[in-house]
Amino acid sequence: MWKQQSVQVIFPAFNEEQSIRQAILDFFETGFVDEVLVVDNNSTDGTREQILSTNATYLFEQQPGYGAALTRGLREATADIIVTCEPDGTFSAQDLIKLLIYSDDYDVVFGTRTSKAAIWSGANMSWLLRIGNVAVAKLLEYLFNGPCLTDVGCTMKLIKRNVLALFVNQLSVKKSHFQPEFMIMSILTSRKVIEIPVEYLPRKGVSKITGKLSKAISLGMTMILFILKTRLTTLFVK
Image (tube, rainbow, N blue to C red; front, top):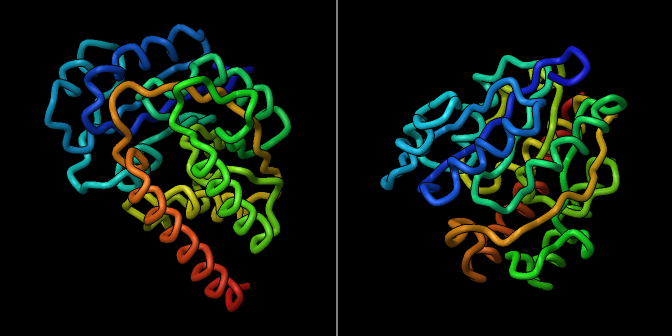
């Protein structure tokens, strides 16, 4: 718990056999996590067995997609404070404490992986990926009058359940461009939103989303189109 508030961590998992068990253990070891929810998104390796060997709660989401897995976890969450994160070794469980400290004053805390000082050697954040993330984040920031934003792809985020409950059933993106939708809805729902840097480490295995430059560019274009389309739609909604 954090100051009498329950804390849940949500992991979307697809073939994370190499890292999922350690990620679960690391977050429990912080002493603040009441429950870890792991959403198995049709893994074909030993991910399920690794999850079941821990105290984490196992969920299975048949609909494929990063967004589908995270949405399932968010809809199942019941804690006062909910944190989403990747279980692939790219994030440090110790950064949970940063997010919790900021939750004393903010409803939503976005992590950013683009701070140069926090990018570890070997992490999948080339100068092109970093610039691309910052550029798309700035587009979202300016179009939706959000806080200072520098990353649209960071999974490590914190949200309070009373805010999440206002829009969780409206989440519709099932694929890899889920984060811009989550960020936009968070900003439109609460003005107490902030972004903070988190450590970004080398992952175990190859990224399914940005492991190849072509995939990263395609995802960036999809995010841009989604942000623009959503802004046009919200112009006509009070």
